[in-house]
Length: 132
Image (tube, rainbow, N blue to C red; front, side):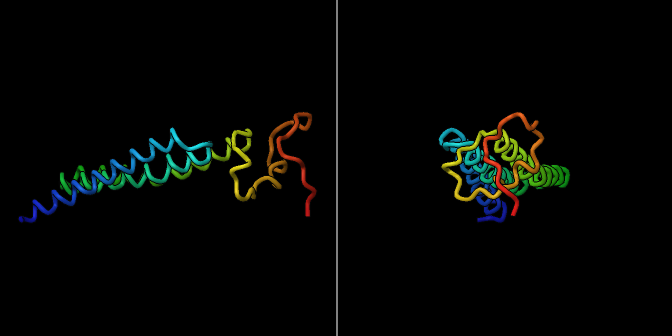
């Protein structure tokens, strides 16, 4: 087997694995019970799937301009996906769109009133806790 044949096989395995991870992320978006679980499923395997797909494409194409573009795509995806998922999760939590029965620990609840921009006459979904 030639070097090009080995590189093609490695690229194919990386691309199929990336596609399967992206498919798993899509299925999880439909199957998971709450927003936080869906958000996790959308961020983690989707980013890894994209990175594997880009790596497979870079191995297969192997031109400097295309590899540079793929590296930029990967860097921007790694920089924006966690921040976007965090902001969506935080906004959903503050809006009461999360299921409290599925949370193992809720570290934000005691501090929610301190950072709330809601007016005082609007009831909060979380009871106020006295400061310690």
